[in-house]
Image 1 (tube, helix red, strand yellow):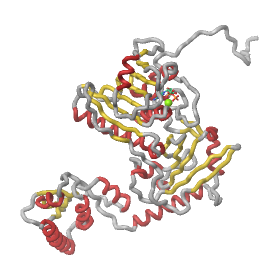
Image 2 (cartoon, protein in one colour):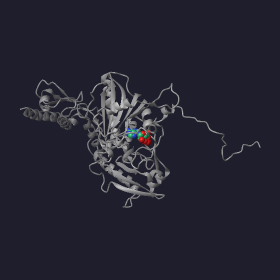
Image 3 (cartoon, rainbow, N blue to C red):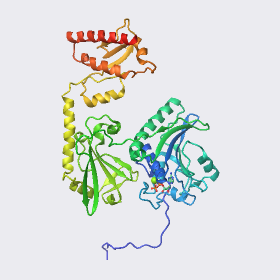
Image 4 (cartoon, rainbow, N blue to C red):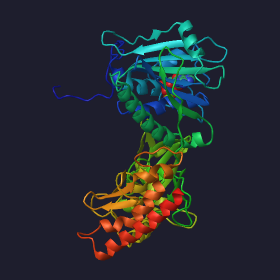
Length: 501
Ligand SMILES: Nc1ncnc2c1ncn2[C@@H]1O[C@H](COP(=O)(O)OP(=O)(O)O)[C@@H](O)[C@H]1O
Ligand SMILES: [Mg+2]
């Protein structure tokens, strides 16, 4: 017969062993960023019951060379280390474990570094060490064995973590993102920026565990060959649901759904309008962080996004929903291997559709209410007279607060600065320079024993700004404005003189 015929089974004759090329190591974890990679290592430390995790940048003669993630968890026993280093080497997971794919350590590390060393000790067992190296010249999957003595010495060093008899060091070398420079200022700026972003991410992802005192995470910088390290920066929790007062009564409200015998619960929150809290802004624009916050075993997987339940909209910026993912819920969604997003299945949409609160209300009602609260807050804002925003000389937070409270006029911001005056006037208005000048001769006295700086004396500066901002508006200075300036100058100069006495 000439026509191609389809057979149910493909016949085979024996098999050949085809181990993956070692380059596949470079391909895993491509979606990681520095901070999501660190989060994956912290997951492992938490799974190992560590109370403390230290993330240490190591500098050698000025240049950043390695990164250490050190914990005081239960470590890895000698007979488990090879499994731990295996890509996809899964183990039996407990109910509370954050690990799942048997991939995290390797994927996270190779997304950032070309060498991964793991040194570990389980209490009462000898120290063990392994190293993976991405090396073009090498063929096959060969993992190096690190001598016990080296692992032992490294693990014995005091890095300020409470001793538990066990612990693990994950060390990255040849870190792709590290700058090649030895310039101290550039290195410092790089580290500060990395630590800040990582603190923001880890503080958010692990906020529940940090708040509960389950784990403390800190960063420091260590100069190789010396005993000195910078004082550690501790990761503060950032709880995206931490508002002082709810934006609407009756909230948070639980909406519950059951699909195919599985139940899913949505805790719907409405933030108070115009918040400038860090927990609300999460280092983005207010509208960026609306939506669902998925938690798995108290670790945040995804900060926001509506997952098709609704399109993102500025009017919904106050709406945030807490969703707990337990094993029952895995039918509705899946997390990506980087544990930084979830992928929902069609059943998830059905669950949202059918979700009801005890009072019978639905997601549509929730969205409506969140919008109402936002609009009411906004109305108050737009009924206020717009202002020229503050510029240089003011604390950065002031700009944020004003921005959320009052519409900004499209004009150059008003700066406030110090200069020498010929007389003892406290301040002067300079419309050409769009600047409020303050008389330097009062500066030291007002500062007391505090240090001066560009943004010093925020209270006085803010009060003067609020008083004088409107004289910067309009083409000409009216006679009324002129008179007001004279009045405030005279009154405040008297006041500041009195302060000096
Ligand atoms: N810091 C650590 N402390 C103790 N064991 C660890 C640590 N990091 C990794 N391991 C071990 O290595 C294994 C592999 O880790 P990983 O690749 O992240 O996969 P997963 O966490 O999904 O199991 C873990 O299951 C654990 O047994
Ligand atoms: Mg893991």
